[in-house]
Length: 275
Image (spheres, rainbow, N blue to C red):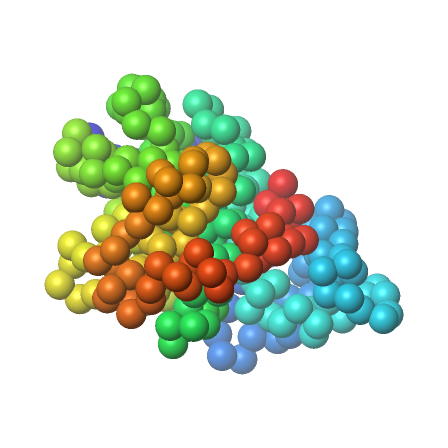
């Protein structure tokens, strides 16, 4: 099996909602119409309701009620809304993936993306790019389970999909890892090249000759998310610290153990968008 065979099965490729397709296209459209996107989101009642719940959540401490999608876009920002709607669309597209705890998986991706965005803002890295990569990179693992379940499910019994060394096992057995598959899917859907390249590097940011800080931020975010979602002990968390990746980003361990807000605070209000 190779990556090409995972993507050359049209009946096993996810069906991406129309609004999600439009938002993917907006990455390369500098003249994207704000109101047009708002209208497309408004046409989806369930999606609109989630977005308005988020905009009106206690996390934002607003003194007024946000009543329209367009107001929510202005308040939350187009890039944040785009990322959350993309995540919602991908969660819907892979809703029937067998053999995975999807609630745990998307919670892990959201934690990874949120921590990575927080880190990026402090490491002088594009935080919007980092959040997109962190939220989307999981599609590689999902596509592998959809299109190659007989080959992938046995690996789940050896290494959990969230384990730090899962990608190394995939590369050893299959010749590629979930980051490679995510990058190829992103390429197929015309995501910008910086996102594609970063997705490929997330599992092992040090392997490539061109070190990408965005991938490294998501890798560090995954380390935090793994602890939060799998509830490892503080000792296990500290002992698994990706020291060399952190060194390349020039971020000390103390940034995470002393300065970082609780993960629940970083992800507050966002979980509903991926359910």
